[in-house]
Length: 522
Ligand code: AMP
Ligand code: MG
Image (cartoon, rainbow, N blue to C red; front, side, top):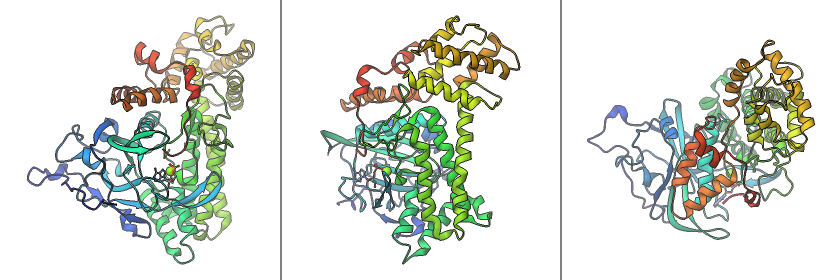
């Protein structure tokens, strides 16, 4: 592959190094041994240049403000796969998985390389290059990622974090003149991803399915690794592996509730795209809901609609069964494994109801809250109301208006519905519920307080496909300023951000947005 002659650069040059500011590097995954990965350096990329950087992610990593420019860090070369810090032990890990419900056998990091971990205030963080060249797991692929999909992954990772949704992070995108063949000629890019771990359900499935007979200890070693580094409390349990499974089930349930509440569709919820830490991972043909349709399928190649928005929680649950199956050899009592997975149901239902309550501005709980939320969603679906805009406008709902149609504030949300009478009937129930929630109080004071709360959970700005598309088109012409502007807006999704940002980024999608098609790996 011609990858062995990579120039190596010191992390901090001898002489000017302040030992206390020197980042500490670790390679704990590497310590698992070569049954778990293939060590290999990245494939260099010609003429690397910066496309985007995330200051928020850099600060998570405790990097200095000028990290991207500092000669001693050599970041542009390191994060495009052209250089390594001396401590880095790059590797491609092996995993398997179920794709679209079918066992797919061995997959693995076909274009991702784990560089190792940086010690940070938030604990060790793994750094991974995505698109750094071919690996033994590339199968028919070229090991590359195109600029277009790299921009989508970068923007969405950081946007999801700002929305308080668990996710892998993105430090930067580097671009190159390297041509990459897709449906049309494109150029290669590398996204540097950051997470405490990139271990997927599929890693466990791999060692359960492929290595179990001859090397049962590998499955256990992987489970011990994940417990020791990420779920140490599970070690205290009588059944550490069942406790691990339960932790993953809980994290997955919480993640699914977040996705539903923010109107996010992942698009490819295969078990190899499921993080054991419950992080959103592998941004591909994802999408945010525009006009609300519970059956919305964001992945153009998902012909069956397996990963439609409304199905995501069930798929998460199904995927947990695949993980449970993989962990079965480590859990003596299969009832315990099932019980661990079953905890998903209640955790998900509770978490989702908490989200709906918060989105409606409710602080207390009443038995009918679920129905109140469901009825709103039903109305929104019937009238194809925009998911993000409807919830955002609901913050301005005035409880005091006797006829919900009368107040000018209520008109802004009411006008989104076609069937106004049906909305009014719901609005009366909502107004009554809000009054009970405020202890009988109503009027501007209580409304103002509620609006503030609602605006902290109902985003004004989400990464709709057409917004990404505009930024991508300009980036492909060499202008990365729109990527930067969009990144900055999405970093503060709950803030009003003034008239210009509102007009450009918070409006209804244009007609042409319906023609955008995104599908699997690019
Ligand atoms: P994804 O659908 O992106 O989750 O990818 C599924 C599998 O295909 C993973 O093993 C990826 O590493 C691999 N893959 C996707 N795109 C490429 C590519 N361009 N080159 C090599 N492997 C790839
Ligand atoms: Mg994947």
